[in-house]
Image 1 (tube, rainbow, N blue to C red):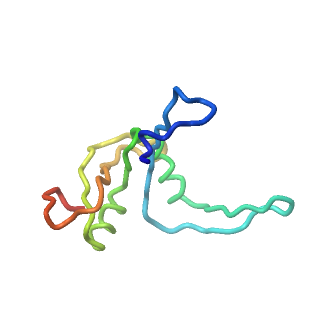
Image 2: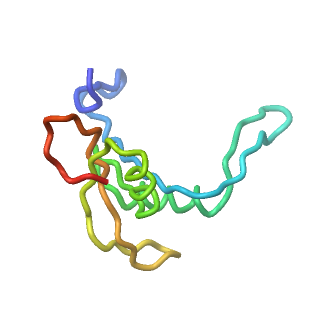
Image 3: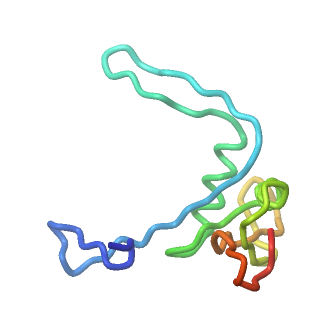
Amino acid sequence: MSIQTFKIPHMPNETVKLRIGIHTGPCVAGVVGLSMPRYCLFGDTVNTASRYESNGEAFKIHISRTTMEALAVLGGYSCVERGDVYMKGKGTLKTYWLVGKMNKTKSSSKC
């Protein structure tokens, strides 16, 4: 089952429109709370990733230049330039779509 065909049990006429934003950088993690502890991430990297998600599109993974560069070092991923996008608190940034993993026969642009 893919996310495009997933049905919400109590809302059968609606589909999930998942957006993902990824940014690479430092952050701090910790458990917050006593009565209901939860694991949280803090820092500008987390806030920036949230901006990528909110400026993204359904069924796409919106990534930053630093994430694209990190994926290029790892190798095996396909990215496409989205172009310049204005991000609140960040200004205009060049952004990318993570298309997927590359296989040996696929000819797409590398990250």
